[in-house]
Length: 243
Ligand SMILES: Cn1c(O)c(C(=O)NCC(=O)O)c(=O)c2ccccc21
Ligand SMILES: [Mn+2]
Image 1: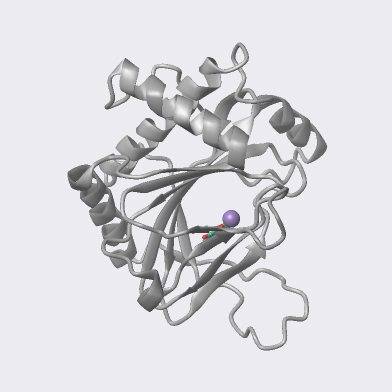
Image 2 (image 1 turned 60 degrees about the vertical axis):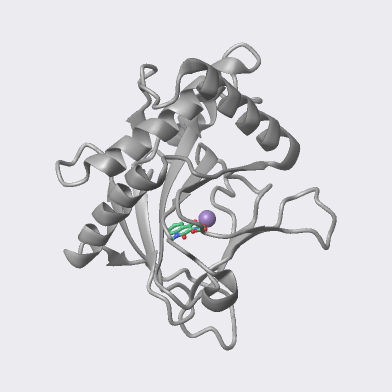
Protein backbone atom coordinates (compact mmCIF):
# COMPACT_ATOMS: atom_id res chain seq x y z
CA UNK A 1 0.00 0.00 0.00
CA UNK A 2 0.98 3.63 -0.48
CA UNK A 3 1.35 6.22 2.29
CA UNK A 4 -0.49 9.47 1.68
CA UNK A 5 1.77 12.49 1.79
CA UNK A 6 0.00 15.31 3.55
CA UNK A 7 1.34 17.82 1.09
CA UNK A 8 -0.74 16.65 -1.89
CA UNK A 9 -1.18 19.85 -3.87
CA UNK A 10 -4.75 20.47 -4.95
CA UNK A 11 -5.76 22.25 -8.17
CA UNK A 12 -8.33 24.03 -6.06
CA UNK A 13 -7.55 26.94 -3.79
CA UNK A 14 -7.91 26.31 -0.10
CA UNK A 15 -11.43 27.68 0.20
CA UNK A 16 -12.67 25.59 -2.72
CA UNK A 17 -10.96 22.48 -1.36
CA UNK A 18 -12.41 23.10 2.10
CA UNK A 19 -15.86 23.54 0.56
CA UNK A 20 -15.55 20.33 -1.47
CA UNK A 21 -14.39 18.36 1.57
CA UNK A 22 -17.26 19.65 3.64
CA UNK A 23 -19.61 18.38 0.94
CA UNK A 24 -17.87 14.98 0.88
CA UNK A 25 -18.00 14.62 4.66
CA UNK A 26 -21.64 15.66 4.84
CA UNK A 27 -22.75 13.26 2.11
CA UNK A 28 -20.67 10.33 3.40
CA UNK A 29 -22.08 10.89 6.90
CA UNK A 30 -25.66 11.28 5.66
CA UNK A 31 -25.85 8.77 2.80
CA UNK A 32 -22.66 6.70 2.96
CA UNK A 33 -21.73 7.97 -0.50
CA UNK A 34 -20.86 11.19 -2.32
CA UNK A 35 -20.80 12.12 -6.02
CA UNK A 36 -18.57 14.95 -7.29
CA UNK A 37 -19.07 15.91 -10.95
CA UNK A 38 -16.59 17.76 -13.17
CA UNK A 39 -13.82 16.79 -10.79
CA UNK A 40 -10.81 17.55 -13.04
CA UNK A 41 -12.47 19.50 -15.84
CA UNK A 42 -12.77 18.34 -19.45
CA UNK A 43 -9.19 18.84 -20.62
CA UNK A 44 -7.50 17.01 -17.75
CA UNK A 45 -10.23 14.36 -17.74
CA UNK A 46 -9.59 13.67 -21.42
CA UNK A 47 -5.86 13.43 -20.76
CA UNK A 48 -6.55 10.74 -18.13
CA UNK A 49 -8.87 8.92 -20.55
CA UNK A 50 -6.19 8.97 -23.27
CA UNK A 51 -3.69 7.34 -20.92
CA UNK A 52 -6.22 4.63 -20.05
CA UNK A 53 -6.88 3.99 -23.76
CA UNK A 54 -3.10 3.76 -24.30
CA UNK A 55 -2.82 1.25 -21.44
CA UNK A 56 -5.58 -0.80 -23.03
CA UNK A 57 -4.10 -0.63 -26.56
CA UNK A 58 -0.79 -1.85 -25.14
CA UNK A 59 -2.61 -4.93 -23.86
CA UNK A 60 -1.77 -4.11 -20.22
CA UNK A 61 -5.30 -4.82 -18.99
CA UNK A 62 -5.70 -8.38 -17.69
CA UNK A 63 -9.04 -10.18 -17.55
CA UNK A 64 -10.54 -9.72 -14.10
CA UNK A 65 -10.20 -13.04 -12.24
CA UNK A 66 -13.50 -14.91 -12.13
CA UNK A 67 -15.39 -14.47 -8.89
CA UNK A 68 -16.16 -17.96 -7.47
CA UNK A 69 -19.87 -17.39 -7.55
CA UNK A 70 -22.53 -19.56 -5.96
CA UNK A 71 -24.91 -21.45 -8.23
CA UNK A 72 -25.99 -18.60 -10.45
CA UNK A 73 -27.76 -20.61 -13.10
CA UNK A 74 -27.65 -18.57 -16.27
CA UNK A 75 -24.72 -16.24 -15.69
CA UNK A 76 -22.00 -17.81 -17.82
CA UNK A 77 -19.46 -14.94 -17.43
CA UNK A 78 -19.38 -13.76 -13.83
CA UNK A 79 -17.22 -10.75 -14.65
CA UNK A 80 -15.92 -9.53 -17.98
CA UNK A 81 -13.90 -6.70 -16.43
CA UNK A 82 -10.26 -6.19 -17.40
CA UNK A 83 -7.98 -4.53 -14.86
CA UNK A 84 -4.46 -3.36 -14.15
CA UNK A 85 -2.82 -1.61 -11.20
CA UNK A 86 -1.03 1.74 -11.56
CA UNK A 87 0.79 3.62 -8.81
CA UNK A 88 0.64 6.89 -10.69
CA UNK A 89 4.41 7.47 -10.70
CA UNK A 90 4.91 5.57 -13.97
CA UNK A 91 6.35 7.77 -16.76
CA UNK A 92 3.63 6.68 -19.21
CA UNK A 93 0.70 7.91 -17.16
CA UNK A 94 1.39 11.31 -15.59
CA UNK A 95 -2.26 12.37 -15.82
CA UNK A 96 -3.46 9.29 -13.96
CA UNK A 97 -0.85 10.31 -11.39
CA UNK A 98 -2.32 13.81 -11.33
CA UNK A 99 -5.85 12.41 -10.81
CA UNK A 100 -4.59 10.31 -7.90
CA UNK A 101 -2.90 13.35 -6.32
CA UNK A 102 -6.17 15.30 -6.54
CA UNK A 103 -8.21 12.54 -4.92
CA UNK A 104 -5.51 12.19 -2.24
CA UNK A 105 -5.71 15.96 -1.59
CA UNK A 106 -9.45 15.68 -0.90
CA UNK A 107 -9.07 12.65 1.38
CA UNK A 108 -6.11 14.12 3.28
CA UNK A 109 -7.96 17.38 3.84
CA UNK A 110 -11.27 15.74 4.74
CA UNK A 111 -9.48 13.42 7.14
CA UNK A 112 -8.01 16.47 8.90
CA UNK A 113 -11.22 18.48 8.98
CA UNK A 114 -13.44 16.30 11.08
CA UNK A 115 -13.29 15.23 14.74
CA UNK A 116 -9.69 16.23 15.29
CA UNK A 117 -8.01 14.25 12.56
CA UNK A 118 -10.60 11.59 11.87
CA UNK A 119 -13.00 11.17 8.99
CA UNK A 120 -15.98 9.98 10.94
CA UNK A 121 -14.44 7.23 13.02
CA UNK A 122 -11.51 6.71 10.59
CA UNK A 123 -7.93 7.86 10.44
CA UNK A 124 -6.78 7.54 6.84
CA UNK A 125 -3.09 7.64 5.99
CA UNK A 126 -2.61 5.16 3.15
CA UNK A 127 -4.28 3.71 0.07
CA UNK A 128 -4.00 1.03 -2.55
CA UNK A 129 -2.54 1.64 -5.99
CA UNK A 130 -5.07 2.75 -8.59
CA UNK A 131 -7.04 0.01 -10.29
CA UNK A 132 -7.75 0.84 -13.94
CA UNK A 133 -10.82 -1.13 -15.04
CA UNK A 134 -12.48 -1.68 -18.39
CA UNK A 135 -15.75 -3.48 -19.03
CA UNK A 136 -15.53 -4.48 -22.69
CA UNK A 137 -19.29 -4.26 -23.30
CA UNK A 138 -21.29 -7.28 -24.61
CA UNK A 139 -23.12 -7.43 -21.30
CA UNK A 140 -20.02 -7.59 -19.11
CA UNK A 141 -20.99 -6.83 -15.53
CA UNK A 142 -20.02 -7.30 -11.90
CA UNK A 143 -22.18 -9.27 -9.50
CA UNK A 144 -23.47 -7.67 -6.30
CA UNK A 145 -20.68 -7.54 -3.73
CA UNK A 146 -19.13 -5.66 -0.82
CA UNK A 147 -15.63 -4.30 -1.43
CA UNK A 148 -14.41 -4.94 2.12
CA UNK A 149 -16.70 -7.40 3.93
CA UNK A 150 -14.14 -8.67 6.45
CA UNK A 151 -12.14 -5.74 7.78
CA UNK A 152 -9.12 -5.77 5.45
CA UNK A 153 -8.54 -2.10 6.28
CA UNK A 154 -10.20 -0.43 3.33
CA UNK A 155 -12.70 2.20 4.50
CA UNK A 156 -13.38 4.49 1.51
CA UNK A 157 -13.77 3.48 -2.15
CA UNK A 158 -13.10 6.27 -4.66
CA UNK A 159 -14.11 5.64 -8.28
CA UNK A 160 -13.35 8.06 -11.12
CA UNK A 161 -15.38 7.47 -14.30
CA UNK A 162 -14.13 8.23 -17.80
CA UNK A 163 -17.06 7.60 -20.15
CA UNK A 164 -17.80 10.47 -22.53
CA UNK A 165 -21.47 10.90 -23.48
CA UNK A 166 -22.49 7.75 -21.63
CA UNK A 167 -26.19 6.94 -22.00
CA UNK A 168 -27.33 4.34 -19.47
CA UNK A 169 -30.56 3.70 -21.40
CA UNK A 170 -28.55 2.54 -24.43
CA UNK A 171 -25.32 1.31 -22.82
CA UNK A 172 -26.26 0.08 -19.33
CA UNK A 173 -23.23 -0.07 -17.04
CA UNK A 174 -25.08 1.55 -14.13
CA UNK A 175 -23.51 1.23 -10.71
CA UNK A 176 -26.34 0.29 -8.34
CA UNK A 177 -25.56 0.67 -4.63
CA UNK A 178 -27.91 -0.86 -2.02
CA UNK A 179 -27.01 1.35 0.97
CA UNK A 180 -27.59 -0.33 4.32
CA UNK A 181 -30.21 1.51 6.32
CA UNK A 182 -32.01 2.87 3.30
CA UNK A 183 -35.61 1.76 2.82
CA UNK A 184 -35.89 -1.66 1.16
CA UNK A 185 -37.02 -0.23 -2.16
CA UNK A 186 -34.46 2.56 -2.25
CA UNK A 187 -31.18 2.20 -4.13
CA UNK A 188 -28.50 4.62 -5.35
CA UNK A 189 -28.11 4.45 -9.14
CA UNK A 190 -24.85 6.06 -10.21
CA UNK A 191 -24.22 6.66 -13.93
CA UNK A 192 -20.54 6.17 -14.86
CA UNK A 193 -20.27 9.66 -16.38
CA UNK A 194 -17.06 11.27 -17.62
CA UNK A 195 -15.11 13.23 -14.99
CA UNK A 196 -17.38 12.01 -12.17
CA UNK A 197 -15.78 11.06 -8.84
CA UNK A 198 -17.70 8.80 -6.44
CA UNK A 199 -16.83 8.08 -2.82
CA UNK A 200 -18.53 5.42 -0.69
CA UNK A 201 -17.82 3.46 2.49
CA UNK A 202 -16.09 0.23 1.39
CA UNK A 203 -17.62 -2.03 4.04
CA UNK A 204 -20.92 -3.91 4.32
CA UNK A 205 -22.86 -0.65 4.38
CA UNK A 206 -22.60 -0.49 0.58
CA UNK A 207 -23.30 -3.68 -1.35
CA UNK A 208 -23.17 -2.74 -5.03
CA UNK A 209 -23.25 -4.19 -8.55
CA UNK A 210 -22.20 -3.06 -12.00
CA UNK A 211 -25.10 -3.75 -14.33
CA UNK A 212 -24.38 -5.22 -17.77
CA UNK A 213 -22.52 -2.76 -20.00
CA UNK A 214 -23.05 -2.76 -23.75
CA UNK A 215 -20.31 -0.26 -24.57
CA UNK A 216 -16.74 -0.16 -23.33
CA UNK A 217 -16.85 1.25 -19.79
CA UNK A 218 -13.75 2.71 -18.09
CA UNK A 219 -13.12 3.61 -14.44
CA UNK A 220 -10.20 4.13 -12.06
CA UNK A 221 -10.63 3.01 -8.45
CA UNK A 222 -8.62 3.89 -5.32
CA UNK A 223 -9.24 2.32 -1.89
CA UNK A 224 -8.23 4.29 1.21
CA UNK A 225 -7.16 2.49 4.39
CA UNK A 226 -8.13 3.23 7.98
CA UNK A 227 -4.81 2.93 9.81
CA UNK A 228 -6.15 1.01 12.82
CA UNK A 229 -8.20 -1.50 10.83
CA UNK A 230 -5.31 -1.94 8.41
CA UNK A 231 -2.74 -2.66 11.14
CA UNK A 232 -5.13 -5.16 12.69
CA UNK A 233 -5.75 -6.84 9.32
CA UNK A 234 -2.03 -7.04 8.53
CA UNK A 235 -1.45 -8.67 11.92
CA UNK A 236 -4.20 -11.19 11.19
CA UNK A 237 -3.37 -11.91 7.56
CA UNK A 238 0.27 -10.91 7.37
CA UNK A 239 0.96 -13.17 4.41
CA UNK A 240 -1.76 -12.55 1.85
CA UNK A 241 -2.43 -8.81 1.96
CA UNK A 242 -2.73 -8.30 -1.78
CA UNK A 243 -2.52 -4.53 -1.74
C1 LIG B 1 -13.52 -4.29 -12.01
N1 LIG B 1 -13.98 -4.16 -10.61
C2 LIG B 1 -15.03 -3.32 -10.34
O1 LIG B 1 -15.60 -2.67 -11.32
C3 LIG B 1 -15.50 -3.15 -9.04
C4 LIG B 1 -16.65 -2.28 -8.76
O2 LIG B 1 -17.32 -2.40 -7.75
N2 LIG B 1 -16.89 -1.31 -9.70
C5 LIG B 1 -17.91 -0.35 -9.53
C6 LIG B 1 -17.99 0.55 -10.75
O3 LIG B 1 -17.13 0.40 -11.65
O4 LIG B 1 -18.90 1.38 -10.81
C7 LIG B 1 -14.85 -3.82 -7.99
O5 LIG B 1 -15.22 -3.68 -6.80
C8 LIG B 1 -13.73 -4.70 -8.29
C9 LIG B 1 -13.05 -5.39 -7.25
C10 LIG B 1 -11.98 -6.21 -7.57
C11 LIG B 1 -11.56 -6.37 -8.89
C12 LIG B 1 -12.22 -5.69 -9.92
C13 LIG B 1 -13.31 -4.84 -9.61
MN1 LIG C 1 -16.82 -2.85 -5.80
